[in-house]
Image 1 (cartoon, one colour):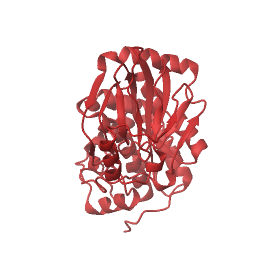
Image 2 (image 1 turned 60 degrees about the vertical axis):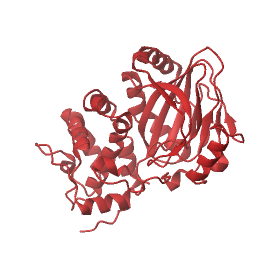
Image 3 (image 1 turned 180 degrees about the vertical axis):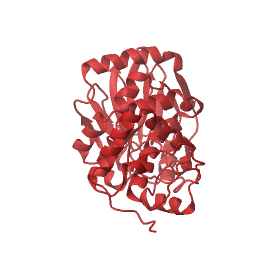
Image 4 (image 1 turned 120 degrees about the horizontal axis):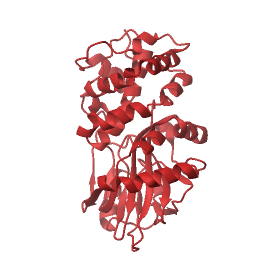
Length: 340
C-alpha cells in the first residue's frame, strides 16, 4: 500500500478544480460556516476537492475526512442527482469508481490516520493541514506553489457590466455586515505572511458574490491566461474611506492569487514590491518597521474595472492612505493552486 503521491492526469485535476460548488458553498457558509472564522469558511472547499482527489487517486486507502470536510461532503451529496452526475464526470476514464466518492450513510468519526497524513503532506506540501486536525506542515513559511511564478497582470473580460452592477448592489446591501480592521503592529504569522499597520473595512459575500466566485468561469479564465489550475478560496467586498490604508503585507496561504476589480469610485494605486518576492519575511518586516509600514520603491498598479491579478502571497504589496471623502468599493477574490 503506497503513500507516495501519484501523477494525476491534468484532466482529472481540471475536473476537480472546475467542479461548480457555488450551491454547496452557499449552504455551508449560511449553515455551519456561521460559527467559523472567514478564513476557515473560505478554505474548506479547497480541502474538500483535495479530499476527493486523494479518494480518487488512492482507491486502496481508506481516506476519512475530518468533520468540516465531512459536513461539506454531505451538503454536496444532498442534491443527489447533481452529485451523482458530478461523481460520474469526475471518475470518467479513471481507475476510481464513482461509488468511492459517495459518503457513507452515517457521519464519519473524522480522524485520518498517520498513513493518510503522510500521503497528504507528500501530495500537498503546503496544504491547510489544520483543517484535518493536524499541525501545520510548514508553519511560518511562504508556501506558494512553485508553478505559479510571479503574477502581476490585467485579466480582461472577468466581470461583465451586468454582473458588476449586481455585485455593486449587493456590496451596498452588505454594509450591515461590515468588519472594521485596524492594526498598529508588525508581525509574521503562521500562514507564511507578513502584516503591517492597516485601517480598512470589508464585508463577506452575499449570494451574488458566492455565485460569481464559486462557479468555474473565473478559474477557467485564469488557467487559460497563466496556465495554472486554481480554485476559489476567499472573497470579500473592500470599502475604502478617508484615512484608510494598508501597510506592506502579503496574503495568507492559501490565498495565493488575488484578483481585484473596481466596483465604484476611484482607489489609490496598489504598490507592489516585486523585488521582495523572494525576500524572507523577517527582511520584509524589518523594512516595514523602518519605513512606517509604507516603504518606497514599489511598482504602482491602478485598480480599475479591468481586473488585476496578483501573486498576493509572494509579492509584498501596500496601498497608501486615502485623503478623499468619496467611498470606493473594490471586489477582492482569492485563489489557490489545487495540486502543486
